[in-house]
Length: 257
Image (cartoon, rainbow, N blue to C red; front, side, top):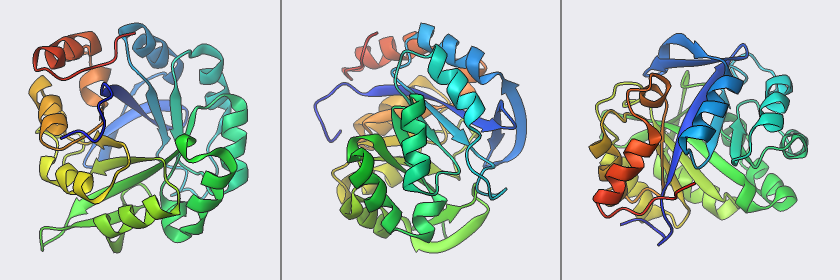
């Protein structure tokens, strides 16, 4: 069901707060997990295909991404990486790419002013622009879009927003299920299958990974092009090479570094 015939990507996510990697459950109960430079080096050695760094308090604190840790990561990392959180303008995106970031993710600012997607896409190219969207099921079984690190419900339907983002020039979608985040109970396969049906863009699935089979399910049943996790990888409960070997045994093609 994956949109392309390309091998899927395994993507560790590093949520950043005050210059440290942190992780929570359902976007709360945040705890410190380590140093971003050390973890980035570890994941590169482990065979990660790319990394995603999200400055999770930037929007809530009404500030830009702190570029100091981004510069340090860019000097050390050889695999592609994406940075999001606090990206509010074309200038923010351009500065990140100038530092050495490969992709820029927008979230809250794009929902507040959707034209931002078109502006950044035109300036840096859609291939470098990821639209990150945090979603949560509502009482009707659909998904609402949240902003400000999951603090504010916009009332927007997730599938409608994804369709608009694609039209405006998004190059990739990072969809995080807030219901699954940090629970280790599995990806919301239904969510990703509906996103897959609504969009031709590559999809990064995020939120809920707890076993190797969960990753296989979200690819084969949900149509994800990339699988993202944090807790499992940070705690070394699951190694990336082990996951890739498992997926290969499930006839799911993976990249090998």
